[in-house]
Length: 94
Image (cartoon, one colour):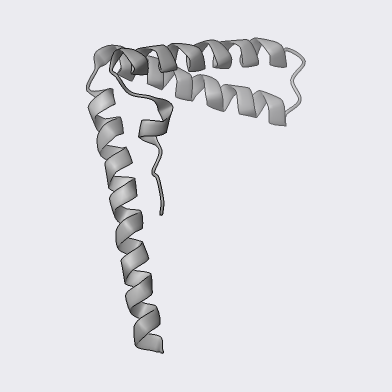
């Protein structure tokens, strides 16, 4: 029974690895675009700032949220120009 379990685990690890590799390759391709790279970097910084502000219950949380949402929208627009979506950057597990 242990051998069967090991084979099943290996099979699903392979599927997981393929899904993650596909998503990583797509992200790497998108990051080669200078505009996406810039917007993505700003988006990641704004996301961290927003969640930190939320966690520390800052009074001007709406400012952080507005910046985060604007960059999220811009990121989606740039991805669309590259004929990609957020979903393409996410691993699809089976």
